[in-house]
Amino acid sequence: MPEGDTVWQAATRLRAALEGKALTLCDIRVPAFATVDLTPGPVDEVVSRGKHLLIRVGDLSVHTHLKMEGAWHVYPAGARWRRPSWQARILLGTATHLAVGFQLGIVEVIPREQESEAVGHLGPDLLGADWDEQLASANLASDPARAVGVALLDQRVLAGIGNVYRSELCFLRGTHPATPVAAAGDPLPWVTLAHRVLVANRDRPVRVTTGERRRGRELWVYGRSGKPCLRCGTLVRHGDLGENDHERTIYWCPSCQPLPGPGTPR
Image (tube, rainbow, N blue to C red):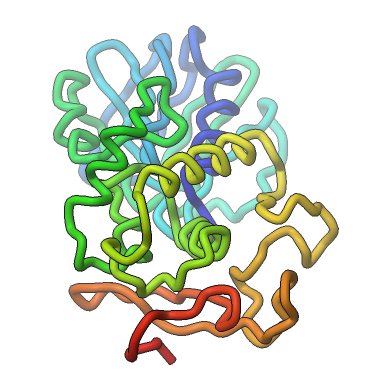
């Protein structure tokens, strides 16, 4: 599932294939931008911001977001694609490589000076050079009544956490995701842990939070509903948690992550 580390890795691949190189192909398969031609470029830089990605070419930026199904692939020129062509939404090619964005949730070309309209709302980027744990901590503490599992997903609080990491972070902190922020303890250790976990995974091909890379033991609770907790053996549970009709599945161990008071999600 795409999260901040996924986008970081995509940016790294795109940077190696495109940055500083002339474009020989620009094919944007989105009606509003189908006539945009960024050739010959060159591509100035590729930047990830949380779950967003910016490819800067001259005074324009290609802004993309993977959403749930999206992915960026990089192929040697002429190589066979690993996804069907009908899923491709943007192609950027050089003399040696082709970058293809498949099923991207957002594809738009914007003036570089307007990037703030696309990503300016984001909180501190967990994998950014300008990561600010004090600001992220203050953002997390700003709504004490909000469920910590909801706050962690809010990209305005801190950018880069998705559903996998929120479940794993809550387990590592011994806290049920539905626990109010005010009852979840000092917010600084939360954001410090989030930063440490994402940095540890940003270059890994398989996401690991347990310290074990054996298949099926990489994550503590995410996707493990009905299976024994890797720490205590209690069966992991799942439910829904969100706000404003945007609920997402959460996973937790009832023994390691008890919820204070009534209202445990089912």
